[in-house]
Amino acid sequence: MELAVLPHHDELIERCKKGEAAGYKELYQRYAKAMFNTCLRIVNNIAEAEDVLQESFTEAFRNLHCFEYRTSFGGWLKQICINRSINQLKKRKVAWVDIDGTDIHDKAEETFTDEREIQFKVEQVKRSIMALPDGYRTVLTLYLLEGYDHEEIAEILNVAPSTTRTQYTRAKQKLLQILKEGI
Image (cartoon, rainbow, N blue to C red; front, side, top):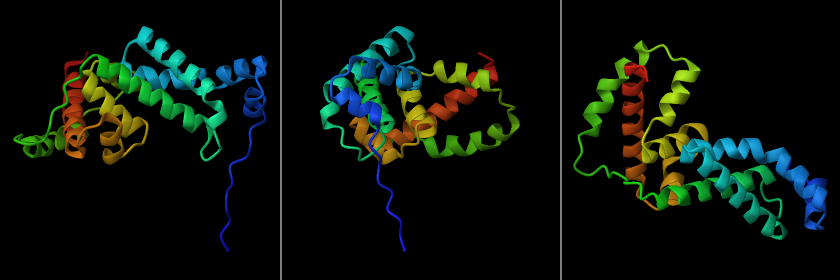
């Protein structure tokens, strides 16, 4: 016998759908910090992350009537934040690197040994991730921290999956280099 898990209707969201101002404030307070962190990990700029966050909530509130509990509200809002963050990066004209004609496979094997030798500290890793170029940081964040696979990332970024794999591999290499240099 299979149990079907149906999303429950959140009273707070229902209050917002009815236009209750206090509900909007409470919903914002519930999700703002987590969504800001998601935006910041992608755009790597506090002011831009704040702008993206506000735009994301504005879009979510404007389209709240479309929210149908197919996913959690947090998941729905997070997708809006990620898409808006990616759009912000596109405004910067991030250069995506394709895998064709690269020797990336040889370099990936060389770094495997180095990864075992490095003792990671959480703050060093966070600073190092933030020091990555936009394209590298975006793919690394979406893959490692947000849990997207390469096909999903490719669809979000409108690039080939091989491009996201290349960006991810190069991001790991660059991250290791930054960590070794102690930035």
